[in-house]
Amino acid sequence: MNMIEKTDSQDPVLNIEHLTTKIKISSGEVSVIEDINLKLNKGEIMVVVGESGSGKSMTINSIMQLIPKKLLKGYEGSIKLDQSDLLTMNDRDKWKLRGNKISLVTQNAMTSLDPSYRVGKQIVEIILASQHVSKADAKGKTIDLLKKMGIEDPERIYQSYPHQLSGGLRQRVIIAMALSCNPEIIIADEPTSALDPTVQLQVLDLLKDVNRNFGTTILMITHDFGVVSYMADKVVVMYAGQIVETGLAKDVINDPQHPYTKSLLKCIPDLKWIYSNSNNNTSLFNIPGEVPDLTKKITGCRFAARCFKAVAQCSQIQPELKKVNALSSENNMEHLSRCIFAKED
Ligand SMILES: Nc1ncnc2c1ncn2[C@@H]1O[C@H](COP(=O)(O)OP(=O)(O)OP(=O)(O)O)[C@@H](O)[C@H]1O
Image (cartoon, rainbow, N blue to C red):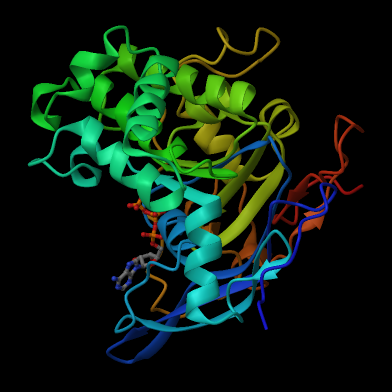
């Protein structure tokens, strides 16, 4: 029986429930992400933010099923794409569903492009593999996509090799490539972190255009809250493998409840140009200490050792995610925080 079911437009495009991913380590196993819940509706931009080691890549690699077999111990929970659970379907259905629905945009365009082929040919190959079109139509579609990515001379870029392009142009090509199989979701893994600041903004703008013009749902990961405030409809703040705060981006930015979120917000040099009503401190700030080693036992809140608000109770009891009083009542997105001091609904 084919496991791929039809989508109801009301259903989330991606629905992750209680996802825990365990990997093998020399002393046994460790949960690198724990009890992750994410719900993405069509056309939304969700940004997952956190420092290095917070579990962003493991979340994306779990969705993309990219964790090497020799490292993976197992998954718990579900990852539903259009109602079908990637974790319970057979490999053939899984690759077909994933291949047709999700495209990945990575931070280093050079690793996604084959240096020995002209970029146009690489996009044409993807179109020919995913759609029943002629070679001439695939070329026409590629030129059209390059044009839609804001590339002024698409014929020249089509004929170029990856190393002949600037970082920004390469990232535009990668986004064109990601769109070439008409995905419902683009997963963007730190798509701008290898670029100059001015080019970063152009690529973020391009992703916003893609979201608006193609209706593509975007799940992005970043360590930079500036990117969250510029891009996100919804935000998920991760720390040490857990979600510590989530909600509509404007609620979380204007009324952060978790001390980790507050600290990340303080790390942004200047938010005012984006949120004119923001009262955030504009001085540069670093969070002292490091994300804990997950292979060691942690009692209590995982952020307690670095938290400016911690009390004795914080290192004794692990807090649950609890619903806080959201600023906005629109949308069905709850504002949740994993802190005993979060103001309850
Ligand atoms: N190959 C691995 N072996 C052991 N532990 C790993 C491995 N890869 C990741 N981890 C652990 O999994 C946890 C989550 O890491 P992950 O790479 O998802 O974080 P991240 O937020 O994506 O960080 P970065 O921004 O540096 O990629 C961390 O505790 C990390 O040490």
